[in-house]
Amino acid sequence: MIRCKSVAEKNSSGNSVWLLKRNPLVRRLFLGIFTIGFAAGALRFLFPWQVLNLGGTESLISLGGTLSAIGQVIGLLLLSRLFRGKRSSMLVSGLLLAAFALTTALAQDSFILTSARLFEGAGAGLLALLIIRVSCEFESSRGETVGTLLSALFLGSAIGQGAAGIAVENMSLVLSLSQLAAIQLLGFILFVPFLPVLGLMLPRIEDQPVSTTNEGPKEHKHFHFSHLIRVLLTKRVVLLATIYFLYDFSHGFYTPILSILINNNGVPINQIGLGYLTGDLVWGGIQLYAGRVVDRIGHLWPLVLSLLAKGMIVFFYAGVFSFTSLVLLLALAGASEGFLEPARNDAAMAYSPTSNLTHDHSHYYLVHAPGMSFSLAKHDHEHMHVTGTDEVVSVLQTVGLLGFALGAGGGAWMLLEHFSMSFLTIVGGAILILAGVLSAGFRFVRTAEPL
Image (cartoon, rainbow, N blue to C red):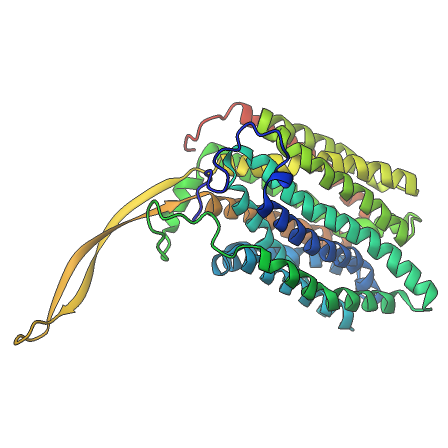
């Protein structure tokens, strides 16, 4: 359980210096998350082509998105409770990604490679909740914190995607390798140095549980599901959960096959990698600034406008036939997403109500005194459970991931039913616009009243 309050930075309000510059913890986490993002971006970018190289289909690529989403749910709900420290969360996330890299290097079957997306997803889910937990320590600059750490992830992913596209193309030409062999070799190259590099960074990151204090009620290990349901059933949280679901459903629907669609339109893999590099660089760079904007004006209008803009941009993806149009659209998409991620994550933390549940139960135990026999005694024990930000945000992230999984599954089914990949992008854009319209409802739902 974590309640968003100022623990790591009590007096940061109004500080004009960038958080990345003034806080060493954020800098260390930024570097570690960037490293993981680089490897993850390269591997995710190469995944669709390798599935096809191993004899798989576009529908199997979409299924990989579903398995990745399931893995992220595992990371959010299970692994995040087992590994609560900053260093341990980063280490486990890196190990899971390394397992995916090794599978990419060795897999000779498209289904085995697709199944390995579970590992990649579990690591991503654990890393996402770590970012939320750390952001809760910086109450007065919460939006900037989540934007800064997410920018590390997306900047690393951007460079990883661009480097992977260029590397595979050149390795195929210089070493006379097939694309399948070049991707396998690159997977091995990523696997070998990844863990040692991450290992050099981890000792500088403290491993204590995030936001731990000696004040307040003790956290108990058993769980009151009905109490969490009551906490979640407020109008703001339900509306935000709907937006999480629609946003991720849309991305699950069209993104797994987007690179294949663009490649079929005549854009080569190295140019697609550079296009993704440009888009994610804009995405990550904008987030460094967008988080400060969210802290200043709130999350409502950045959330609404970014969803509407992204939906309209997605409509044009099917018409990408050149490198120029690809870079332009992905840069615009990156700019809109750059405001979206800090806005929706700040909304998740702002709308996560902290609620207390106090109850008692009897403890039975044996007592014994000299010269007397054992006897059974009891006393009533009272304790408090606090449902806090990390539990509520975990549920919202899980709702989004279920949306991604269902979207990817729906996209796979539509491909099997011979709908075109272009049609999937149109549907995805329409869903994003619907999410943008619904998010305007936060203007009229300002309190945490129940449904």
